[in-house]
Image 1 (cartoon, rainbow, N blue to C red):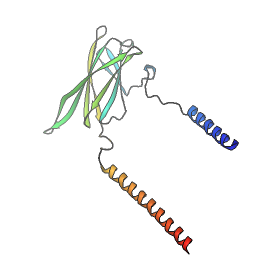
Image 2: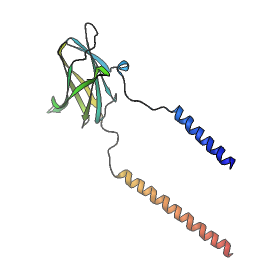
Image 3: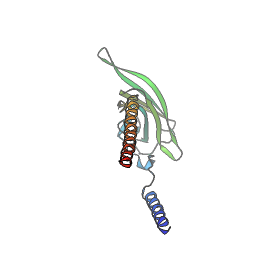
Image 4: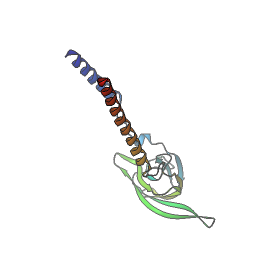
Length: 192
């Protein structure tokens, strides 16, 4: 009986220790940690631009912008930021840029200097983000930033399901074979 409680106590201690050593991972990034992929000067603004994931794939990409006044470095917190995603296509040997969708990047009271927008790219390829900044106190600016979206790593399909079903059938058949073989061997030992 004491042995059971000792093992139970050890298990509880290991669980508490592992929970204490593995903290939760927070993927949010605060204003102080803003690390732009590039900085562009447009009009009176200097704008840091970053997106997550850094190598965007088809799907949702989080775009973050941090506009400041170029002359003073003072952050801009009252701007309206519009991002238009333009798809760069090659038609008859010429590059044509067509607007595909647009989003408004917003800031929040806790992080007033960084404007964020989630953009859903539905196809891979070369895109251009046309970023328009309009601040009642600091003026207007717009610029373009190229972005390349990669195809998704794995296309969904039924092939994985068939492989899983095959593995389950093989393992089940092997287990049934072992049970039948052991019963025959036991019956042969008891008979002979």
